[in-house]
Structure formats: C-alpha cells, structure tokens
Length: 432
Image (cartoon, rainbow, N blue to C red; front, side):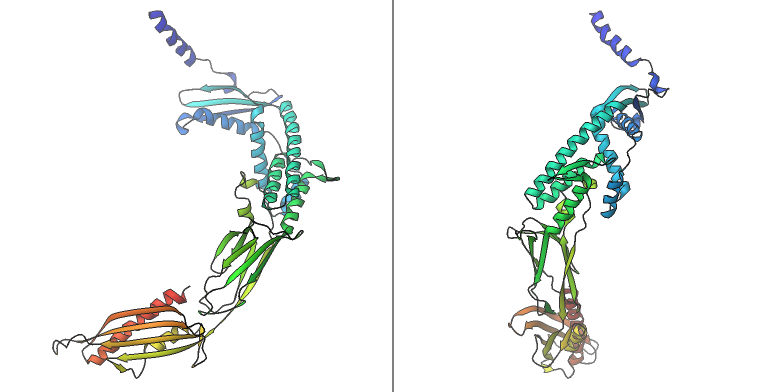
C-alpha cells in the first residue's frame, strides 16, 4: 500500500525538478531554422503557456522577410489604400499559414514565468509557401470565374475573396491564363472589381424636383439599379443615400427599386441628395475586413429646389370677447416664419388660422390684489389646395395678472401665450 502511494509522489517530484533547457540561456543558432522563444510572467496572463507560445511565433514571424511586389504597390496606391496596412495584413496571413509547419520544441516554467520555444524549418517553409501559392491561385481563379458567370452582388464578394486568397503571396507576381489571355493575378482581380463597379447603373428620379416649404410635405427619391452591360435589374444591391439630414443604406428590392422618402424641410435652402454603391455594406459579412481591396464607388447626386410657400393669415384675436386693436399672435408668427415663407393677402398655398380669446374666472378679491384673466388660443395650418389641416396647436387656461385692469391682465395672458406658441412652432415645425 505504501509503495503504491510513493509512486505518484515520485513522478510529481521528477516532473517539477526537470533541468533547465539550454535554449533558456543560449539562443539557438541552427541556420536551417528560424527560432522563436517566448517568455511571459505568469501573473500577467490567464493562460501563460499559450501566451508564451504566441510570443514565440511572433518572434519567428519577424525573421521572415516579405517584400510587397511593385505590382501590388501600384494597385494599393491606385485604390487609395495603405501600404503599411497591406503589409500588416500580409504578415498576419503568413503567420496563419505557417502554423502547421511550426515545430514546438518545448515549454519550460519557473515559479514566476513560462517559456516556449518554437522553430520553423526554412526549406519546409519555402516548399509550403510554393504549394499554398499555387492552391491560392487556383482558388482565386475559380472565384473570378464564378463571379463573371453570375453577375450580381455576389460577384463583388467573390472578387474580394479572390483578393484575400492571394494577399499572403504578394511578394512576387502570380502569372495566370484567364480566358485565353495572360494576366498578373493581382491586376486581374483589381480589373474585375473595377469592371463590376462600372457595370452597376444607379438611376435616381424625384417625385417632385421643386418643393414648397411646409406645403410639399411628401416627396421621394426613386432609385433603379440595373446592369449597365445587359440592362438586367439587380436586386440586393446596397445603395448609400446622403441627404442634408440623413444618411442611410437601402438595398434594392426584387425589381431593382429603392424608394427613399425625403425628410420634410423647414429651411429655405435648395439641397442635393447623393447616392452611391455602398461598398462598406457590400462587404460587411466578409471575414477579414482589413484585407478588403478598396473600391472607388462613383457618387451620383440629384438636386431639389426649395422655394417659399405663399402664406396668408386669418386671425381672430380677442380680449375679454372684444377684438384686439393690435393683434399679438399673428405678428409673432410672421416674425418666426418670415425667412421661410412669403406672406400674402390672397391666392396662398397655405393658410394659418388663429383663434384666441381671454376670459375672467372670478372677480378681483380687493384693491390690494391683482386682476386675473385667462387665455385660450388655437393655431391651425391648412393646405389651401387640399383643405387638409396638417398642423394644429392648442393652449388653454394661460393666466395673466395686472393691478391696473382686467383688460391689461388679458394682455399679460397674451404675452405668455405668444411665448408658448412661438416655442412650440419652433420645436414642431421650424427646427425639422
């Protein structure tokens, strides 16, 4: 029984008292390999063994020199891309590819640290890269052929997948034959992306090219997406639409159509709406966003003319049942809207109706107390052509007080009503 207990204890003792490997103190120098040694403090990482291995792999990767080919550099610059970003992507891709070829020589741990030693055979690496480059070429050509044969949104995604396949091998040109012609594969991918972008025809029309403020409350941009080469309608194409108040991406429906409702405008300013193929939305589902070949989408625009509406005011403003000699609400509304509409006496596009009055609830309590008068007001905006009331505001029981007279107390109520009405109009109509 005692011998059985002693055996596991002995094994544990030998496992913890292993000798320190030479690579801890002496950097390996075998020129057939790239060597990487990683060290981490146990207290700094939840999984120090794995982290030490990662650092060792990074050290190996820094010894592998990759030169971006001049052809690839030209493509990146023409696409307004970053060479540094491309280089980082290439190196990250190379590290992923070389993982199966790495040899884990060993691990070692002390009380406070963890060590890992990995190495990569240079000849095996070169052989593997040649094999993987050839595989990537075949896969990329398959993607290109599939993209050509069935043009649509998937064509763009397939071309990006082709690009991502060959990106790790950008240190030298890849020659291919495609449809009887010889190409550099990087250039072929870029050429196809440009061709596909040029084939997307995005046509926009407006329901109304001119809008009258407040009156024309409904207008929309109609977009049709087609294949410029065949005239075929294209569904599922994301189009980025930018107006002065909005930016949204909408996909074309099964008829190739997009309808964008233009927000109601409250400022007298003509504006343009821009729309273009949304490449970010187009490629959002791809695995490696940093490895996407940039695309220079053509921007389209359409102009909307905004003109002032002709507005008349019909006002009935009373104080204690008697018409005000000097109306207060109508002038305040005119001041608020004067830069946005044209006020006229007749033949208007829009009518603003004002009905207001004040009333007394009770008699004054005494000479030492003020008079109190209460006001109600109703403001309605009506479309002259359709007769539709498209905006209304009602305020009631607005209290005004004055020691001079009941009538003056009514004027004080009007002052408060004017302030509330203008604030509401600014919030509901003028600030849109």
